[in-house]
Amino acid sequence: MSIDLPAVRRKLEEERAQLLSRSIPPPEPARGDEADLAATAQAKEQSQWLANDQKQRLAEIDKVLARIAAGKYGICDSCGKPIAPERLEAMPIATLCISCQSKLEKKRK
Ligand SMILES: [Zn+2]
Image (cartoon, rainbow, N blue to C red; front, top):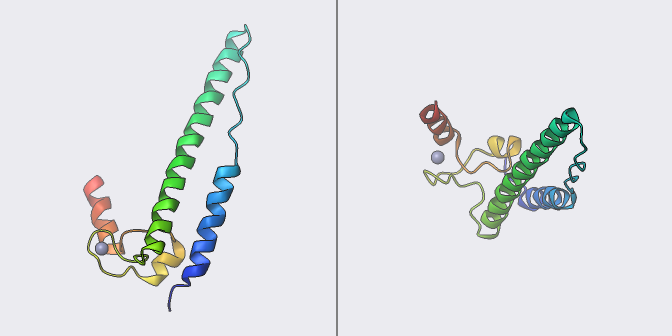
């Protein structure tokens, strides 16, 4: 099983374009009511979280696209061994092999 690089790149570029085109709705202007103010603050927080999430996703996609361009796609960032194609299939933006990823997750716990 080998990795279809052009297909991976196309998929990532599509997702990137989608993320960039998705605009974050501006929060409703605050009205006098306290409940409204709280709702506005919550909506604002939510849109900020979305923005951060999208930014993070974009950064990940850019990183992977750069790796594809550099011919390093599918190589583990930590140990330099090839990442299993099955893993890349399930998670195209993976930059660590399964064993390095699980080591990292154990460390975080
Ligand atoms: Zn590794």
